[in-house]
Length: 388
Image (tube, rainbow, N blue to C red; front, top):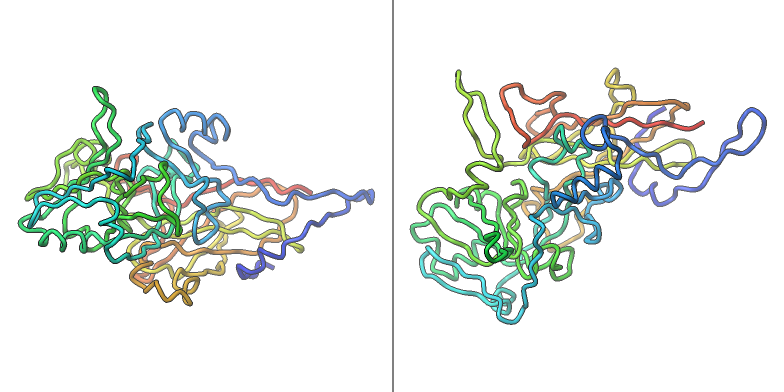
């Protein structure tokens, strides 16, 4: 009844109709709207929710764009501070300080270095929390540019630096300094960070950080500093406001609530699209995070009473013929899943849950020992009405 379907079947969807009891043809829609069960979209509707989010400089990706291995550049999600600086290629300099030997790179110098590719999820740390609900502040792209390790080697190595602060050029004189965020050298090496100059094979757009941005696979995108202007080596953790106060939760440790920074992307999944097929509907979505490969995705269409396995396409399978990518280049990438669904007319509550290679299963509810807006990993429910 609910057999998995391959990704290729999405290309063969056709327009059908059904007949009602009077024999009149009733056209079915090509897709069904998957409505979040909480947050701004539930309270105010999608349009007002999108307006409120743009007001605080957030734009979500359209759900259907999250059912592809690479999210298109046009419509890619945005989370910034209302400032998209115009940085000219001529005269641009990336300054690297506090390392073995301070050095500046112009754009030509950066482009002359060996490029590496990373296919990875970028996600706002607050994506899908109890305010936003809809979980569209994420995307996946193929980023290209020199590795941070290569840039440091050009500077004589990290020297005494055990931590780094990354500074953007999105400053407004007298109003805002450029955005900055810090990570340890250990974290950056584990994530295999790069300084990206290209996105999906094209030079970065202004919106996405031209001429250069930091990309740190597997770590939330508050660390992926756009319009990168300076890399600052430090001998202690960066104490900027975004590290210290903004992107933090409270965690119960013993009998005390301790402030902790959001960091590694947790294990998650979401049904993002429902398309019509000849004999029913096809649910599609993505599964990501958690630190090890995705091995299983289950889907429920009855509010969690029963769960069925979906058909999963891993990034390794999708890019298996791409000689430029090795497995490590995709460790931060999401998998896609599809599930054939043949419901009767009515209203349904849908969700997905994912299991990774370590046997960890996506949680149904948030950990009661953590308070805050970030790293929201619980199962994401969607309401849908099937016409008939």
